[in-house]
Image (tube, rainbow, N blue to C red; front, side):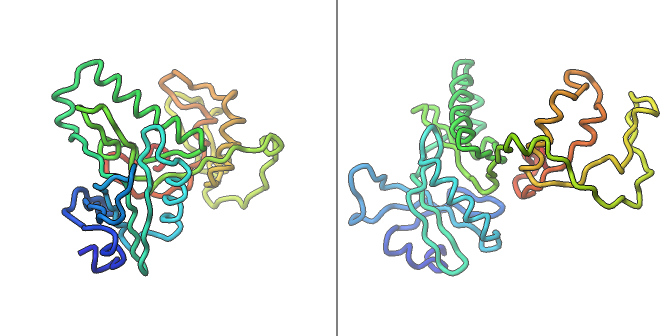
Length: 256
């Protein structure tokens, strides 16, 4: 029982059934106790219990981003959080929603347009705060066909994107130690031998801020946009350091 691992919840909520379950969290339906109900406060709540194995900095990140986004523009609102030892519960409004298979059967073209528009509104709100969700999938975008209301949820994999300073864009990279495999080349079937790239030219993995600087400088030199091939610059694009959790089949594209 959730009350056993976070006893403080018993004084605030009545915990009900499990309404959702993921790799690193379980969501319960809860009802706010009468003495805490006030105008504008929902009585039905969703309580997300985060599995204790999740790294503390990821918990801090999710709390920080939910607070920044303030529950606006179709993003779920964080009401409060309760922590007891290694266990954390995030309390949010309960949102009545339909399963994807039901939506697919009922949706017409205009409904699809509304669904996508509301999802893009939530993403635009996040991007204004320089945050990317990284786990967009039907289960994380709750939508009610009857009321047309929706909420983007689950920010466990969210990540901030730093804007590079103009002075850093032209900053030369420091020389790195040559790899023992420096003479091995990566060949593209559409390339001539002179166009093939050596592993010595392939940059090491770098942090997201460095990748932002790299991508800005390489945009103008890319020669494969819209073509069925990969150019030298894109082959050398470094991988991003990012959390690899999530749902199979919905892994973020920047994670190999």
